[in-house]
Amino acid sequence: MKPRVLVTREVFDEVLECLARHFDVESNQDDVPLGAEELARRLADKDGAVITLSDRIDEALLARCPRLKAVCNIAVGYNNIDVAACRARGVMATNTPGVLDEATADFTWALILATARRLTEAEAWLRAGRWEGWKLKQFLGHDVHGATLGILGMGRIGQAVARRARGFDMTVLYHNRRRVDAAIEQSLNARYVSLDELLARADILTLNVPYTPETHHLIGAPQLRRMKPNAILINVARGGVVDDRALVEALKQGTIAAAGLDVYENEPKLLPEFLELKNVVLAPHIASSTESTRRRMAMMAAENLVAALTTGKPPNLITG
Ligand code: DGY
Image (cartoon, rainbow, N blue to C red; front, side, top):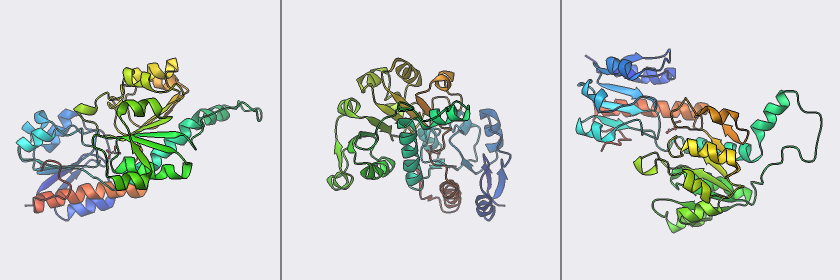
């Protein structure tokens, strides 16, 4: 009998075809989000699963799924998975590192430019039929070229963001848990600074850190107060890295100038105040969403599951 696996959300056909060569596959091509109860019910008789960042894999769920041997996330971030609980129960967990770096860096820049140049605000105004002609002071924005870019988190995605800054003649500062190699700093023309200095000097601050207990509310009211009043905050990392309530206040009070956000606390239920603010550009967690990137992420998760259940050695193991 083939191992039984669950694919918790809609995926591309080739992903199901790949899985079906090895497993009995139950898939949720209707893409209806599975609540915790339904997820546990469907996983109870499965050997493995391809999951997404909306599926919480924790001890309570694992306790109800005794056959489960592998959960393969279609995401590089894995804060939805209790890694320690998986380890303790011998469940392999995997993620999708590398394949989404460039698409995510591209989108970081889309948010930087849209936010600095007030693109979505201006478009909404034009679509509302309010444009009566050119005006000197219309939608004055912030210069991106020549500005100081602060990167918080200089992993693969942070570095891809920094590479793109070269074309904009920017000063690039970064802060990271560990300073990166001198050769990388040199190639990116990026200077390591303390978090305090980064906050104080960045005109544009992008967040590129994983969400962990250590990065929870890394940017809250005290950090926002240290930033410049003309600063722009960009978050494509994870909701929870920023204290959203504090950010709403900072945007209302003019503590910082604007924000470009792809991720939120309690997604998809973002704070309604964000919708009222003009100085924020909002996207629905799509930084990695290009056709080729999302196909590669999903296929990578499927390949991890095949490797996990056939050899016990998935390439992108996070529970090792
Ligand atoms: C990730 O891979 O962690 C992204 O947030 C998914 O889009």
